[in-house]
Image 1 (cartoon, rainbow, N blue to C red):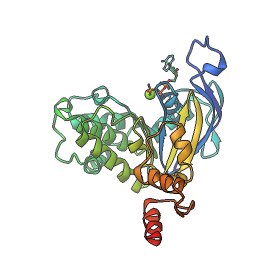
Image 2 (cartoon, protein in one colour):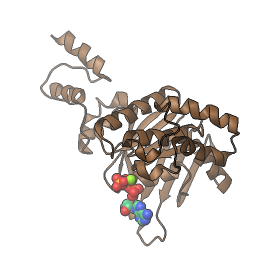
Image 3 (tube, helix red, strand yellow):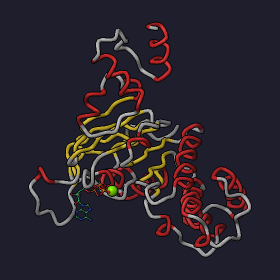
Length: 279
Ligand SMILES: Nc1ncnc2c1ncn2[C@@H]1O[C@H](COP(=O)(O)OP(=O)(O)OP(=O)(O)O)[C@@H](O)[C@H]1O
Ligand SMILES: [Mg+2]
């Protein structure tokens, strides 16, 4: 069935609340995240990305507004516990997510709380190790792994709990280029097998890998665009300081110069074929 998450006019402030409502961390956010989507959330420091992430996995409770899973309102602690299982979270610092002295125990940790049987655990551990490319690493000590490998271990631990959604909160920002690429690649693979991927990032180049881009600013949603409408909305992307991909910039520049390039272009491939017809 999967997990569709809906936020309906959600507001959030940190306790104790001494701030005017206009300064709350999350302001009147209404969004739906459907099973299988690949979404990026981008915004400057303090724009509310992490607060939103914590609302999405049940760690925080909306100060105002409602949250629904598959149409059912999330009200009780039991509901929120179930949300945490369905929505896994990967954080920024690879070192802060290690909980056990071996790769095997680290992956087993989350499953222990779910009451998974020993046999089932062993099967799942092998599956997730393969999924994240760490087969054969069972006995290794996590602190000997590279940053990218540590993040992949954290992802393995989440995958072993069989979530529907994985939220990545700037999970690539502390990695070297190899580590970063391996995590981006893994996000695409997880999306390919039907997991909802929500990637919070500061990097426009990473954000534009997703199929849908959400821009947050001072706690509010400023833009929520499917990838195919990015060409038509390049000016708005510019306005929010996003470093738009070269093909979108080119499309915009050619139109400004008066070239007869269609405003219906939705992808790089379409832009290329448009250009061929103009040659
Ligand atoms: N633990 C906290 N206590 C009080 N205020 C907080 C806390 N964490 C965040 N805030 C405030 O809430 C607002 C949103 O912060 P949040 O961490 O959600 O933003 P962010 O977009 O994730 O930022 P960053 O890019 O720096 O990670 C900011 O004004 C921030 O100062
Ligand atoms: Mg943050």
